[in-house]
Length: 332
Image (cartoon, rainbow, N blue to C red; front, side):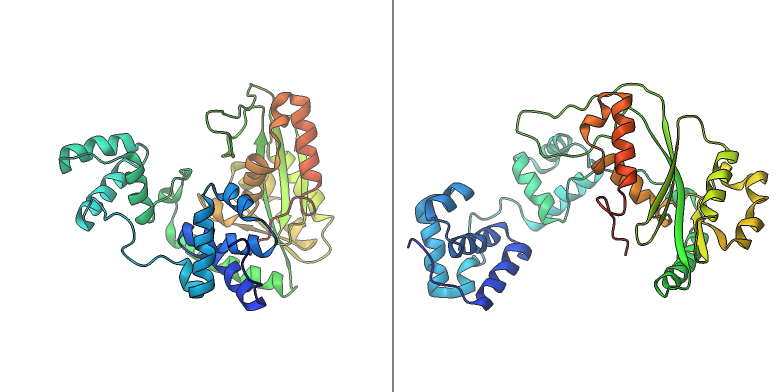
């Protein structure tokens, strides 16, 4: 079969849903091949796309024509039976959870406990079946915080967010972050056998003090020197003169935010319509500007920014000036 018969609108919708959301990769691939054929792609091109033979693609099309959507899903029990029982797979999963960073260590321990070896590909498949994925480990301060204070603050912020949605207040978030020529190393798609290398060196630190509201309207101040309470107060004071509506500003408990100089300005800011709301210690996830810093460091700054301090300044200013337009986060 060279091309499939013309698809109806309902069939296109069904195949698109299957291509995007079906849990099995092979079924997603089959659905996509039908959509590609419907769009005019030839069988040889589909074969080249998915690295399969012509007979395989023809079989997919034939099953679709004879069985419909059911022809794209394999019957249960297809393929070689698993080498491991469910109990043995449970043992494998428990070993992975004990040594999540090294599958070679897991394989070594399993050989001693189970008495036979499995391949690392089999081990990875068992991990995927157990809902495990390979991803970056996060640093966390949760063990240091007071959970009751955190939960209470989370509930209070929900009320403030609703007030923002009802246009009763403008809810903004404030924090500082630093940028140097020592980059944060992101994940990236790379050719097998080759590694993208990012320049890294010591440099002066660019300190950014930022304000962002829940609509991703962003303002910032950049300094090359160290940040103290006087600088923080001056930036918030300038921000307080710019607000047009009653505004609540969410901040953390850094020493520059709790000094006497800072507290002496609270009343003056409140008279201008700016109220300070402090989140509990060790609760960075309550301050959504942390998402902005992470996006800048891991996604928005190009690798070329780390070629020189001048490049870093140029690229950083370019990103900062376009947050809310070119660079945007949709806060829920």
